[in-house]
Length: 87
Image (cartoon, helix red, strand yellow):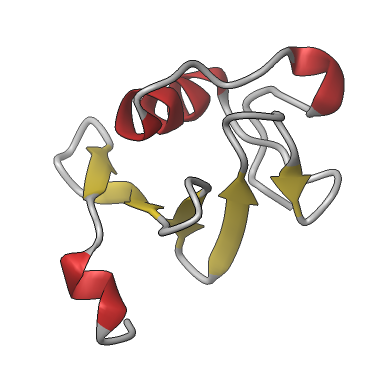
């Protein structure tokens, strides 16, 4: 975690046992960083662009990204979606 991270808005999504499954951080430029274990994905809610390209982000996580960013994530035509393992 960088020093800046403690000042950025964030959210944690829990699994059914109450463990953190995804940690979301709203970045200064409006994108949202998603961390799950050692995997980091960045989503731009305005465009729907997912970095790294081809990364799979479950729909419930994308919904949380939109909630944190204050806007729905752009159309699915620009991103993959599903219930994969993020690789």
